[in-house]
Length: 189
Image (cartoon, rainbow, N blue to C red; front, side):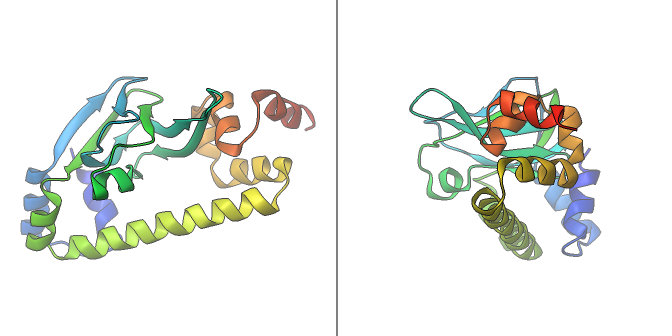
């Protein structure tokens, strides 16, 4: 059930069979229906979510009522509100399944003990968070330096799997566009 997670961790740190068994017996598995929420604004994030199957979005609602997507996650990606998880503060975000999905949950309550028992997990999570932070910085660079059309084409080239799986209006939200703008870009081909 957790083979893809173990394989993902092994890309960054080696695990012994004993460590793998300890890890997999500490996790929770959850099937998530399409449109089901893992987190809503105002709730405390209580787990780190690894996508085993499916697709998720993380978003907030602007003052004008418009949804602003800040992250997508597909198989072998993490999706979590780290501020809410680490600081145990109410979340500002929603995390919702875009399609029927399955996740592995690292409950906040087990993470410290699990990392004490498997110290390599600390390194793994540090590397994952560093990569996520670097991707966030790169995304900000694109927002401030690329035109809208350049951002769309870059996203399309870098993440073609999303173009097929995610509704156009969600891609538009993530890129900071209206769906009409995306249609206009697509029409120019």
